[in-house]
Amino acid sequence: MNESLGIYLLIIAAGTLPNYIWRFFGVIFAARLDEDSPVLRWVNAVATALIAALVARIIISPAGALAHTAISSRLLGMAAGVGVFWLSRRNLGLAMAAAVAVLLLTQSFMPFPSPR
Amino acid sequence: MSKPEIQNDPDRPLDWSGFITGMKTAFGVPGLVMSGSFIGFGALVGGSGLDLGHGLFMTLTMWALPAQVLFVQLYKQGAPAIAIALAVTLTAVRLMPMVVGLLPRVRMTRSHRFLEFIAAHFIAATIWILAFIHFDHMDRARRMPFILGASFMLFSAMLGLTAIGYYLVHELPPLAAAGLIFLTPAFFFISLIAGARHKTDLIAVLFGAVLGPIVYFIAPDFDMLIAGLLGGTLAFVLGRKSEKGGKE
Image (cartoon, each protein chain N blue to C red):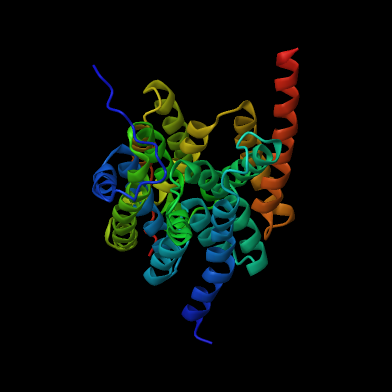
């Protein structure tokens, strides 16, 4: 089978369906679920930890050009983003800009090998 | 200042002027932040060796950035389909309370279930925030069209931006390309902290970030799944304990 076509099928089976099913349940169960129930709070905590693990994974072994930056730059960028988020009274756009700016600034003082 | 009366009567027909309002609302700060993160997603897809078509197909059929990025990352790691599906579904459970929270405020007596299944496909963090801001001063009959209008605008824009990110990552100097890919993890991490409503959520961020890399060395295919379940459960238990302790 064509490899690219296989990836589309994988996206449907392991991406689209396991993702949409919860929206489907949401329509079915609307008005019957309390957002602050213990089960939903546990689910939220699991999803939060999972996404935090995903972020850690991307920071430790990133894809493409980001892999050629120093891990110290990536960590500093992340810290700057969180810091600016608090200092700017929760301005998400400014915080993202600060994270990228610090990554690029700290990295531009270091050697940067070409990815190709 | 007099507040205009809000019509909350569910028996009226849908008021489609809300569609235009929704489209306009898409051009706000939440939409701007979303744009940055989808350029980042396109860049990530480009950097991971997948086709642009795969990235667009994911944005089209999944419409949930954490699940999309997770898919790309696990695919790149070579994880088996079952591990990807399980991890994706765990990040997607949080969409259910969003749909459950929004639909009762939208539902009309005569509206079709079909429209709700369409609207549900678009309900994710950004639409949730937009609805949260605007629903309180909007007639009930305009809300479903509002969601569809904002979604239509954001959906078209994000498909375009996924493609732009994909091409930019190959055209830009490597350092700038690295900055684009960095948008996604930065967005997620700051959003996690921004969205934390309870102490449990912050503990979960900490546990997930620490456990993830540790578990990777033990079970590389199921690292995020295990870190999520273990870290989330621990955070849930600790969070409940500290809340109970605080009340007494």
